[in-house]
Length: 353
Image (cartoon, rainbow, N blue to C red):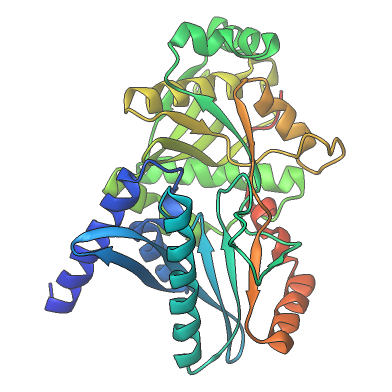
């Protein structure tokens, strides 16, 4: 390892320790390993970290992406990470924005805007000078299951139909296994492709998963779960572990043997595994807003809500515009590629039985 690589590794480890110990709802998308994974997919990234001596106070992992020749945008998923004290948070937020703007001015390419997608329930009064974006990359509504509950209480807080269907799956002899081997990846891709084709979703590419899943295995950042019946894998879930949260990131199911209710047991067993590993929440990662019954995720959300839990709504994505003409180019590129719903389109879920 070169001296430069060693220095990056030390700084990355320090940042990850900080966000894991911050006591805030900071997810894996602010982690160093996620930035490295995104770099393998064509993204750039840089860090913004403020310290008091050796103590990290806050900052952000900023991803960068080209959307047209010579034109880029900056993106902060699940961040920035700010102190809990409001006055300190305001001061550090201003410093983060100023640092990123200075970085942008030094960038040889045109940077259209900075996109923030924090997990804030409300927008702080000191966050000004931006616009609420009509698009987003990651869902702004989600559902959390409290894993601090006992197994019996987890079942008790579910809706009756969810609890009943877990029992149906058990009575039919459905089993749940973890498999992150090459065969597991192949089976995952098969189920993923079948699901997106059936639901008219865009899905992610095979290369995306072939790069992501081995990283999960190597760093113990997550796993693949399969629900099996009579030797056939009927449903799957890709779960990512980070801090207090276990996140259901991708999933899918077959239409065969739907009466055995395999997806219900799949998620319940994934919850129990996450609980055993010490995680506090199982994040279903994306549900339709409660006031939008005709949302494209309505059916999938009905399935997820049968597990009970607490629903969270986050502020809209926020854009700090640096170059208005380039920003309009960015928005037009979204319209032409429909990338603005790419996150929604690529998220698949165990189809409601």
